[in-house]
Image (cartoon, rainbow, N blue to C red; front, side):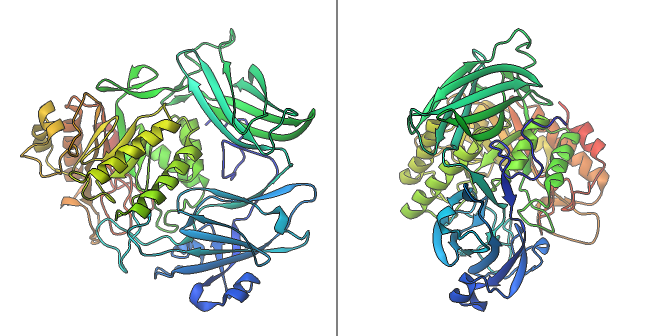
Length: 577
């Protein structure tokens, strides 16, 4: 595995790396809202402890209480650094987070799946300051929640809720004049890259320099004055020391460029940021998906990113690496991260290991004007925060009409899906966008279908003509492929959920699709038949459900602890075209 030049173990934001930072994960004071007064919470006087970033529902948190609590409090001591700005970053907190320093409100954020950052310098005293975070979460199906249950007990394919902090919390030290954002857009047509960036205090006295290297060899340096709120500069990557082929990002051969960004104010360096990027083009072209202008067949696994002991939070970096390695060993070239926006370090490892990722908005399950406004903001934040990762190849907005249950005939709901499609395109012109994965599409770059038929021959017959695939079939009880007013216009087709065969090797029973299987041979026969059926169709790929069991759902190829249910080499043998 070849790490990027800027890699730091544990650094939560691997494409925007600074040297001066402090990891705040670990032991914090903790309380449920009903167990403490606000006054005592703001003083940091909390009766329990918790291990951040694990939610209180999980074993790794040290609390392990699966009951719903609407309010939770966290507290610990922090210190500023003289002459530097102190920025607090919270990678993910579900759902409304309020931050206090020494009892003074410092900022509020709504939404579970995006990073938020606050400059808390003005609230610090120079000694041990009390950082307190209050999180409020609700059982409302109207909020963005993904696979988190909204009833007291888990049901169907919905699991224990995740409340409060569930991703890393950390501090960063910066000068007054520093880089605040960086958007990296490669162009494979002319082997160039564009940097769109912002700084904290733009002026004619601020210069930003970009130093690009490739596997230790200097490629290009370009500078730009940062005199506006938004700035951009493009640079060609052609070099006599590099071949174009070697400089492209491929599955299993992920060529990455290193990037050093330096900010100067009146000639003095005030900031250094490490990053990286790749020359990679992934697009829907006619009825094919193309990777760097070559047809690409997506062999994906559905990946919900749960762990038995830590819920939605990866136990550590090694766990994320292991999931990618296992998926590759089983013959898959990517995952559809389902109803979760993963830790950004997962995208990093996918970047450096040459593995594709579909990124999906965790669903709300009820539609209203207020919900539409909230999911729009959260989705655009998700897109902007993860835009630079070369492994991220597709955006998925809705899933199976969750949150837009009447999209097939409700013009407001189909307009919301199409509106979000175009809003995504306004930020990202590089990637295919799917408006409603699996069912009743509005505007979409890929037609995706879900079907959990367990008989491979029946599945093959159901989709043996383009008309059956694109218009629906009397043999298929699934919802229509398109909402009213939309129709197939030649896009690539992916069966983006299928399989889901329930298989347990002991007396345990749980939820899965179809009749469960009773042994390795029966499972492998069914798995192989389903894969052969999908591969025989004239489509652009598939996504098999799923990589691991999740709580009571037992249709994984692996158990929750990542132990294979059947030999991995037998899965790989059948997962070939």
